[in-house]
Amino acid sequence: MEPEKKSNGALVGLIVIVVILILGGIYIWQSKVKNTLEQNKIPSGPVTPADTNALNALDKTINATDTNVGVDVKTIK
Image 1 (cartoon, rainbow, N blue to C red):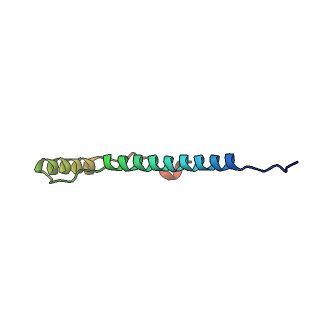
Image 2: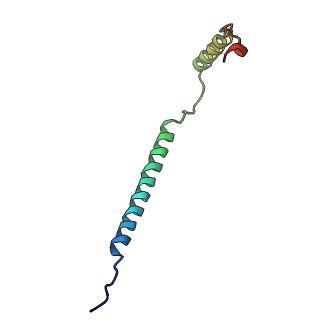
Image 3: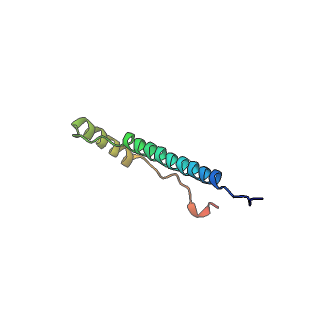
């Protein structure tokens, strides 16, 4: 009778497949992050007088807005 030989081929194959899946997932994740960052970039270009006027009007509106709501923060629990 010959002693049984243990074969680890299935285990090695499983490990290789898992590593390939993990690397593929990381690759896809990084490519999606890169695409998202590219889409969210603020376009740089010359500031037009219309943009400046709009920003100045917004700034005046923000400064003129009454944010005092009369709430005493110390009494809120």
